Amino acid sequence: MRLWSIHPQYLDRIGLVALWRESLLAQNVLKGKTQGYKNHPQLKRFKNHPHPQQAIAHYLVGVWEEGCKRSYQFNKAKIEEGGPREIEKILVTTGQLRHELDWLRVKIQRRDPTIYQQLLSLQEIECHPSFAVVEGEIEKWERRKTITSGNIERK
Image (cartoon, rainbow, N blue to C red; front, side):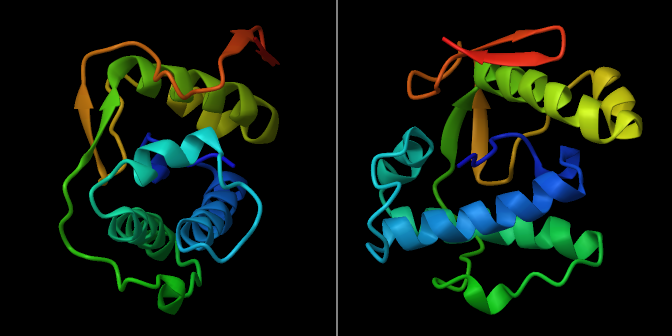
């Protein structure tokens, strides 16, 4: 499961569709509707939010909106809380955003060289609308990965 902190605009088709599915799974986990993934590190920031279900609904709306921009047919009715317009934003560090962008570049390089080139020239990283950026290193909950010449290795 990967609930990207970076804005969904950076994801390719495969990545955005996967994010939609994984975000819906996260919604089910947070509602106690599934046995798996309950302790997945990606969910910690949503679980720690004062209103976890509203936070994941807001996150899903951001993914749905990006899908709409691309004429995808994501079903908004699957967002159970209706997707609140505003929530208390979840903090994400600059280090986490850089880490995610680096990881995405490796994945995209194989799948879509055009998007890969666009990501290489990116100067500032925009985060998903559910987050607010603060200075800092990679998040403690992140499963550390070493990114080297097109490969990702877990530490």
